Each structure stands twice: as C-alpha cells, then as structure tokens.
Image (cartoon, rainbow, N blue to C red):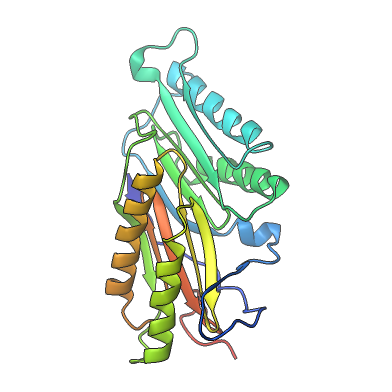
Length: 254
C-alpha cells in the first residue's frame, strides 16, 4: 500500500519535573481531547479496488463494524471475516490497536472515527491502513495478522539544533528505557526528553522487541540531533520529543 505524508500534532507540554539522573515512567498525554486523538498521522491504500455490492464489500463492512464494536471493550483485537457466499478471494483480515494509555471510551471513539474516515482516504480499495494519534486501524485481503513487519511507513524528524550532548544523552537513555520493559506499550521521560513506544499486539513479545529495536535504531540514525522524531514501522513505532518542541512546526514553542 502507498502511504501519504504524515502530519503530526505538537508534542504535549512537559507537566512533570523529573530527577536528572534517572529515567522515570510518565504520562505523556495526561489529557487527550477527542480532537487530538483523531489527529491524522499517516494512511496507506491498496492499488486494487473492489466492486460495489460484491461479497468482498460485505466482508469489509463486517470487519469494520467488528472493529468498532470490539473497541468498546478492548484496546486491541483482530478479525478474519468470510460471510456465507464468499470465496477465498473475498476473505478480509482486519485489526485495530489503541494507544496504551487510553481509556476504553477514548479507544472506542478513536477507532470509530478512524473507520469513518477510511472511506474518505481509501475509496473502495481492497486494503487500507490508517494511523491516528490515538489508534491504528487496518484491513486487507492479504493475510497480515501475526506477521512481523518492519517496513518504514512514516517518519518525521525535527530540524537539527546542533550537537547538544545533554539532550542526546537523555534521548538515548529514554529510548533504551522504553525498550527494556518487555511491554507492548511504554512511555517515560528524563527531564527535558519524553518518549513513547508501542507494538501492535498481534506479534509476539520477541517480535515486538525486534521491531522496536529497528525503529529506535532508525530514529537515532535518521533524526540525528533533531529535538523530536517519530518513526512508524508496520508493526511498531518509537517517538521522542524534547520539552518545548513541536513536531508540527519543527520550531521551539515559546
């Protein structure tokens, strides 16, 4: 699927003071409005399209309805749908993943919003993946559930601010901390630097760690001395932000 350019919200302000010598867990988004959770990051659409009124369309609609319904009780789920009258070519696979710090109502709202917007971004396409600030939704006719995917689908880096050894050391410490917990979602910070990582829960924990290691390696390499950076791979992402910097404008917020 071809992905459009990512547009990211400004990173939230630093609302806590941290010890300067250690990395601590932190809530990066202590308050998430519905509008911020809906904010667009990237979308990818298949080249092929399905015919209106076809069994495939019925399966797509069933998968998307299942995603929204499930999001009212769980932060992650996946489905394989083949309604009566379908052939093997009509099978549709789908999943959603909400950000690990969201409440159930926030998760449900985000997934419902994402599903509604799929028809705008990917009109009658056989596959679509949409990442919003608060959730990820994907469906396709090709089996992808449980498969590792370290393809870079979206990356964005702030402008270089020159070599700042303290900021870079804290960034590296935060990113190391985030991958050391053996969790699908983790966030943390060290004074000026905040970070977040997450995997889609259809992969194993070992595959999650492998994906995050790849994302962080690319993030450090490709974003260099940027004050913020976001790296989204097919099954995981890693993000960091220096206090006071925005990933929307790339400039420091005064």
